[in-house]
Image 1 (cartoon, rainbow, N blue to C red):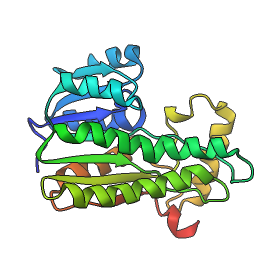
Image 2: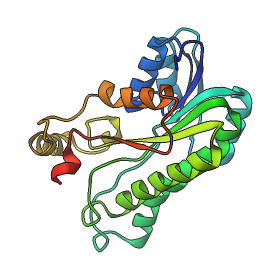
Image 3: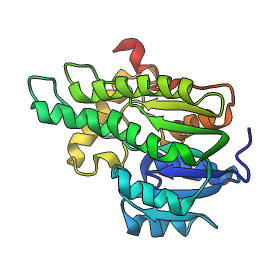
Image 4: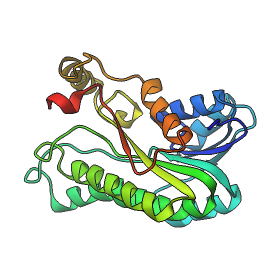
Length: 237
Protein backbone atom coordinates (compact mmCIF):
# COMPACT_ATOMS: atom_id res chain seq x y z
CA UNK A 1 0.00 0.00 0.00
CA UNK A 2 1.24 3.47 -0.86
CA UNK A 3 1.05 6.26 1.71
CA UNK A 4 0.54 8.86 -0.99
CA UNK A 5 -2.45 11.07 -0.18
CA UNK A 6 -3.14 9.04 2.97
CA UNK A 7 -3.65 10.87 6.26
CA UNK A 8 -1.12 9.75 8.87
CA UNK A 9 -1.32 10.83 12.50
CA UNK A 10 1.97 10.59 14.40
CA UNK A 11 1.65 10.89 18.17
CA UNK A 12 5.01 11.97 19.53
CA UNK A 13 6.04 13.29 16.15
CA UNK A 14 8.02 16.37 17.16
CA UNK A 15 11.30 14.60 18.03
CA UNK A 16 13.16 11.30 18.15
CA UNK A 17 11.64 8.24 16.49
CA UNK A 18 8.32 10.01 15.93
CA UNK A 19 10.08 12.77 14.03
CA UNK A 20 11.82 10.10 11.95
CA UNK A 21 8.45 8.54 11.13
CA UNK A 22 7.15 11.98 10.16
CA UNK A 23 10.09 12.50 7.81
CA UNK A 24 9.49 9.20 6.02
CA UNK A 25 5.71 9.52 5.77
CA UNK A 26 5.97 13.05 4.40
CA UNK A 27 8.54 11.88 1.85
CA UNK A 28 6.07 9.16 0.82
CA UNK A 29 3.45 11.78 0.00
CA UNK A 30 1.22 11.40 3.04
CA UNK A 31 -0.85 14.13 4.62
CA UNK A 32 0.81 14.55 8.00
CA UNK A 33 -0.75 15.32 11.38
CA UNK A 34 1.58 15.65 14.35
CA UNK A 35 0.63 15.47 18.01
CA UNK A 36 3.11 16.33 20.75
CA UNK A 37 3.38 17.89 24.17
CA UNK A 38 5.82 20.69 23.26
CA UNK A 39 4.02 23.42 21.33
CA UNK A 40 7.24 25.26 20.45
CA UNK A 41 8.81 22.14 18.98
CA UNK A 42 5.69 21.45 16.96
CA UNK A 43 5.76 24.95 15.49
CA UNK A 44 9.37 24.44 14.37
CA UNK A 45 8.65 21.02 12.92
CA UNK A 46 5.51 22.17 11.11
CA UNK A 47 7.55 24.66 9.10
CA UNK A 48 9.47 21.76 7.59
CA UNK A 49 6.39 19.88 6.39
CA UNK A 50 4.16 21.61 3.89
CA UNK A 51 0.43 21.37 4.64
CA UNK A 52 0.97 19.47 7.88
CA UNK A 53 -1.25 20.03 10.89
CA UNK A 54 -0.06 20.04 14.49
CA UNK A 55 -1.80 19.72 17.84
CA UNK A 56 -0.11 20.35 21.18
CA UNK A 57 -1.53 17.90 23.70
CA UNK A 58 -0.33 15.34 26.22
CA UNK A 59 -1.51 12.11 24.58
CA UNK A 60 -1.43 10.32 27.93
CA UNK A 61 -4.39 12.51 28.93
CA UNK A 62 -7.26 10.49 27.49
CA UNK A 63 -9.85 13.29 27.64
CA UNK A 64 -7.52 15.86 26.10
CA UNK A 65 -6.60 13.49 23.28
CA UNK A 66 -10.28 12.77 22.66
CA UNK A 67 -10.97 16.48 22.21
CA UNK A 68 -8.10 16.75 19.73
CA UNK A 69 -9.31 13.75 17.75
CA UNK A 70 -12.69 15.42 17.34
CA UNK A 71 -10.85 18.29 15.64
CA UNK A 72 -8.65 16.01 13.54
CA UNK A 73 -11.40 13.72 12.26
CA UNK A 74 -10.87 10.52 10.21
CA UNK A 75 -7.33 9.32 9.47
CA UNK A 76 -5.86 6.37 7.58
CA UNK A 77 -3.02 5.44 9.89
CA UNK A 78 -2.02 6.23 13.47
CA UNK A 79 1.49 5.82 14.86
CA UNK A 80 2.23 6.30 18.55
CA UNK A 81 5.78 6.45 19.85
CA UNK A 82 4.62 7.27 23.37
CA UNK A 83 6.29 5.22 26.07
CA UNK A 84 8.57 5.57 29.06
CA UNK A 85 11.60 3.79 30.43
CA UNK A 86 13.04 2.69 33.74
CA UNK A 87 16.08 0.92 35.11
CA UNK A 88 16.60 -1.38 38.06
CA UNK A 89 14.97 -4.52 39.31
CA UNK A 90 11.91 -5.09 41.47
CA UNK A 91 13.66 -4.77 44.81
CA UNK A 92 15.52 -1.63 43.79
CA UNK A 93 12.29 0.20 42.89
CA UNK A 94 9.15 1.01 44.79
CA UNK A 95 5.90 -0.68 43.90
CA UNK A 96 4.66 2.72 42.76
CA UNK A 97 7.63 3.18 40.40
CA UNK A 98 7.16 -0.25 38.85
CA UNK A 99 3.43 0.38 38.46
CA UNK A 100 4.10 3.77 36.84
CA UNK A 101 6.43 2.17 34.31
CA UNK A 102 3.82 -0.42 33.36
CA UNK A 103 1.17 2.30 33.13
CA UNK A 104 3.46 4.46 30.97
CA UNK A 105 3.71 1.72 28.38
CA UNK A 106 0.78 -0.71 28.39
CA UNK A 107 -2.06 1.32 29.89
CA UNK A 108 -1.14 4.48 27.98
CA UNK A 109 -1.13 2.45 24.75
CA UNK A 110 -4.54 1.03 25.62
CA UNK A 111 -5.97 4.48 26.38
CA UNK A 112 -4.60 5.88 23.13
CA UNK A 113 -6.03 2.95 21.18
CA UNK A 114 -9.47 3.41 22.67
CA UNK A 115 -9.47 7.08 21.67
CA UNK A 116 -8.04 6.86 18.15
CA UNK A 117 -9.44 3.59 16.78
CA UNK A 118 -12.93 5.01 16.10
CA UNK A 119 -11.28 7.58 13.80
CA UNK A 120 -9.24 5.12 11.72
CA UNK A 121 -10.69 4.49 8.28
CA UNK A 122 -11.39 1.06 6.82
CA UNK A 123 -8.15 -0.73 5.78
CA UNK A 124 -6.15 1.57 8.03
CA UNK A 125 -3.70 0.74 10.79
CA UNK A 126 -2.56 1.49 14.31
CA UNK A 127 1.12 1.05 15.14
CA UNK A 128 2.28 1.51 18.72
CA UNK A 129 5.63 1.18 20.45
CA UNK A 130 6.77 -1.66 22.70
CA UNK A 131 10.49 -1.51 23.43
CA UNK A 132 12.89 -4.43 23.24
CA UNK A 133 15.88 -5.14 25.45
CA UNK A 134 16.27 -5.18 29.18
CA UNK A 135 15.51 -8.05 31.52
CA UNK A 136 13.20 -8.29 34.55
CA UNK A 137 16.12 -7.97 36.96
CA UNK A 138 17.38 -4.70 35.45
CA UNK A 139 14.31 -3.07 33.86
CA UNK A 140 11.44 -4.49 35.90
CA UNK A 141 8.38 -2.35 35.17
CA UNK A 142 9.52 -1.48 31.66
CA UNK A 143 9.82 -5.16 30.72
CA UNK A 144 6.35 -5.90 32.06
CA UNK A 145 4.97 -2.91 30.20
CA UNK A 146 6.59 -3.97 26.93
CA UNK A 147 5.33 -7.55 27.24
CA UNK A 148 1.83 -6.36 28.09
CA UNK A 149 1.86 -3.98 25.12
CA UNK A 150 2.71 -6.84 22.77
CA UNK A 151 -0.20 -8.84 24.18
CA UNK A 152 -2.43 -5.79 23.71
CA UNK A 153 -1.43 -5.68 20.03
CA UNK A 154 -2.33 -9.34 19.59
CA UNK A 155 -5.74 -8.83 21.16
CA UNK A 156 -6.55 -5.67 19.24
CA UNK A 157 -5.44 -7.21 15.95
CA UNK A 158 -8.09 -9.91 16.29
CA UNK A 159 -10.78 -7.61 17.69
CA UNK A 160 -10.38 -5.04 14.92
CA UNK A 161 -9.83 -7.39 11.97
CA UNK A 162 -10.48 -7.21 9.11
CA UNK A 163 -11.08 -3.46 9.13
CA UNK A 164 -7.97 -2.23 10.95
CA UNK A 165 -4.52 -3.74 11.37
CA UNK A 166 -2.63 -3.34 14.65
CA UNK A 167 1.10 -3.81 15.15
CA UNK A 168 3.94 -2.67 17.37
CA UNK A 169 7.54 -1.70 16.71
CA UNK A 170 10.03 -2.82 19.37
CA UNK A 171 13.31 -0.91 19.20
CA UNK A 172 16.09 -1.52 21.66
CA UNK A 173 18.07 1.27 23.34
CA UNK A 174 19.10 4.14 21.10
CA UNK A 175 20.30 7.69 21.63
CA UNK A 176 17.16 9.85 21.38
CA UNK A 177 15.67 12.84 23.22
CA UNK A 178 13.99 10.34 25.57
CA UNK A 179 17.17 10.62 27.63
CA UNK A 180 17.25 14.42 27.66
CA UNK A 181 17.14 14.52 31.47
CA UNK A 182 19.96 11.99 31.87
CA UNK A 183 23.53 13.35 32.17
CA UNK A 184 25.26 13.20 28.78
CA UNK A 185 28.17 11.24 30.23
CA UNK A 186 25.78 8.51 31.38
CA UNK A 187 24.09 8.38 27.98
CA UNK A 188 27.48 8.04 26.27
CA UNK A 189 28.44 5.19 28.61
CA UNK A 190 25.18 3.40 27.83
CA UNK A 191 25.70 3.87 24.10
CA UNK A 192 29.22 2.50 24.38
CA UNK A 193 27.88 -0.59 26.14
CA UNK A 194 25.32 -1.28 23.42
CA UNK A 195 27.85 -0.57 20.66
CA UNK A 196 29.95 -3.39 22.13
CA UNK A 197 27.09 -5.78 22.90
CA UNK A 198 24.78 -5.58 19.87
CA UNK A 199 25.95 -8.10 17.24
CA UNK A 200 25.97 -5.38 14.57
CA UNK A 201 28.33 -3.42 16.86
CA UNK A 202 26.34 -0.20 16.82
CA UNK A 203 23.04 1.27 17.86
CA UNK A 204 20.30 2.02 15.34
CA UNK A 205 19.76 5.27 13.56
CA UNK A 206 16.39 6.97 13.89
CA UNK A 207 15.74 6.33 10.21
CA UNK A 208 16.33 2.60 10.57
CA UNK A 209 13.79 2.34 13.38
CA UNK A 210 11.33 4.70 11.70
CA UNK A 211 11.32 2.54 8.57
CA UNK A 212 9.79 -0.31 10.61
CA UNK A 213 6.74 1.84 11.30
CA UNK A 214 6.44 2.53 7.57
CA UNK A 215 6.56 -1.21 6.91
CA UNK A 216 3.83 -1.82 9.50
CA UNK A 217 1.63 0.79 7.84
CA UNK A 218 2.15 -0.31 4.27
CA UNK A 219 2.27 -4.12 4.39
CA UNK A 220 -1.42 -4.94 4.29
CA UNK A 221 -1.02 -8.56 5.40
CA UNK A 222 0.84 -7.90 8.64
CA UNK A 223 -1.17 -7.58 11.84
CA UNK A 224 -0.75 -8.56 15.48
CA UNK A 225 3.03 -8.42 15.24
CA UNK A 226 5.79 -6.78 17.26
CA UNK A 227 8.57 -5.91 14.82
CA UNK A 228 11.82 -6.16 16.79
CA UNK A 229 14.48 -3.70 15.61
CA UNK A 230 17.45 -4.48 17.86
CA UNK A 231 20.42 -5.36 15.68
CA UNK A 232 20.31 -8.90 17.04
CA UNK A 233 20.64 -7.91 20.70
CA UNK A 234 17.90 -10.33 21.76
CA UNK A 235 19.96 -13.19 20.37
CA UNK A 236 22.86 -12.62 22.74
CA UNK A 237 21.32 -11.03 25.82
